[in-house]
Length: 115
Length: 113
Image (cartoon, rainbow over all chains, first blue to last red):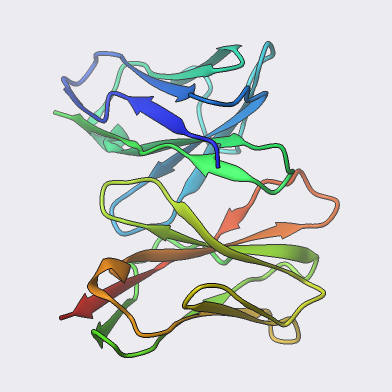
């Protein structure tokens, strides 16, 4: 399966600052990437679908101005959490769609803690 | 799967036992299902999948059963090992949709040596 990396693996930031999380496809050109967030002991919730070269599609209830997604190349998508608040503390996971429509390969996740 | 904001149910087993993890889904149009394993602090990993035209599929030490009548999936792990300790999620896809999965609530499996 495809290999997806995320950077950083964990980050601590102060309230009001912005944080950028990178999602890289290491061995595959991913036209579509997904961003999820996961609170402790809960399931994955899809935040947005990111398509290379176009604007991301956000799920209902996800603020697009707060969670900026950029998918500028076939191997890199970024999620920027702007003006972070403690309630944004979560585990953020990206995934890429493989060659099959049902295939998804997940990154290792980024733990964000906002103090 | 039915994703709700509740804490994960937990299944504790002894090493060597067989484990059965259950999942309910709500969309009758779902036609493809995947079980994922998520270890602590990591992203989900694919375990096994099944299409709606099947009711059983076997992999290495794992079996997935699908009951479309009651919209229920189960994952059976044979001879459970400590390395199987993780959270297990089911995900379902619906035909005619955007091929984006809906994740179930998840079950935390704890294997005691």
